[in-house]
Image 1 (cartoon, rainbow, N blue to C red):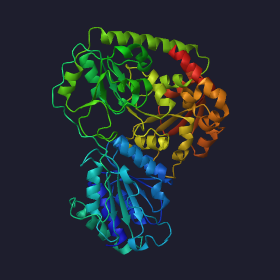
Image 2 (image 1 turned 30 degrees about the vertical axis):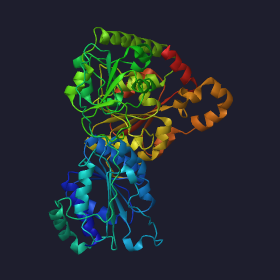
Image 3 (image 1 turned 90 degrees about the vertical axis):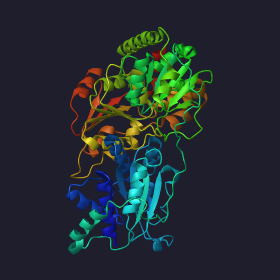
Image 4 (image 1 turned 180 degrees about the vertical axis):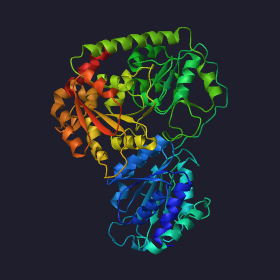
Length: 558
């Protein structure tokens, strides 16, 4: 089988599996895949998105998979191009996103010979993929693809990334006379069942999942207990329904997509100091990642804790969590029980007072802060919202109300990196054509500025990027590094090594990529800009003072 025929069978397998979006970074060794994808796109079987930066490509594919809730593929040539995908693959691993990596490679006879752009690509992603297939040149790739795609969808555990390494021999371009005949044959072979061929080199990730473990004895009734429900990233609306049904306080992170209903407690992390000693039980949905007070609560051995695990999870290893693992709702209901009399109302009253105090504080602030921006972004987003790591998502966690919720809230919380965030948001926006707003800090924006580059003729996402620009890494000033004693001794080092100050001109950068930019100076300007419909790409920049951040948060807590 020549390289073009092999590539056609790859694209036929993708289309047969329902994969509609492929992100391609240009290269020579991957040319057979490029031509085959072009043919499939002409037939209307899938969409191609071209990005010149492989890291951007991978995070765009990650966003496409998140937004469409089905696998998306990324195609690269050989060499360092494959290594550029690792950050997105790692995020997909821990967030259980079905990202399909298709890397082109030299044939076996050229490996280890010093051939240009040749390295050992099989197994490159190690434990971070559910399956890794090395397809020899001339071999039918369809059975390998079928097995890999099944694992990406969660055949043997949580969904997640897979790697199919495809070796191609010259020639790498199609024969014009034979192009039409081969495509039909490829489609006829696409349904090959998994297991009809054996991978010559398959690396399967070690088991990082935890199968649901049902307890052997029934849980005692928790009726009348002081129980709280913690909804972490990806918890889903079930957490909100569960808390509301039992009359329990709901402490919901913004990307839980459970921050609504009558049980939601605004500014919950500021209330845990008061209510924490009274808490007797905790029910956890999803993965909590944002708050140290919540982390401290979940680490307490004097509190009964249960983690709802209805299916294997990718974000923790078996035996490493201290909570009791519960896999059925009946058992979870029995564990939690109905809230004690007045328990929820106490929380709600305190939450309402905290929310009112926050709004009064914001009204008194002379300049815009991250909390102003978080409040406005949440209240004015009707479609998709993507939240960058570091301070922005924590600001929203503090400010987001429970009486309004965007259509869907996304965040890269698998490993909570700041890399690839613009690209991820672009993929989410492209997945279903839903206008998407992204809130990021300036370092996150700069880290993935290449995600703004869009080739001529490429489909443009409806994506608005709101950048909170405090000229550096503001979150470190809120951590131990910002303590007065630390700053007194290591002030200049902390600023240089953690604050990472810069003078980047975001307006010029956006202009260079052909993206409209607007500088926002007042709350009224911000609200007006956020109320406008999102069409195409744009950047809203809000400048703030990082030096005042720690004092401002101290006033908020007070």
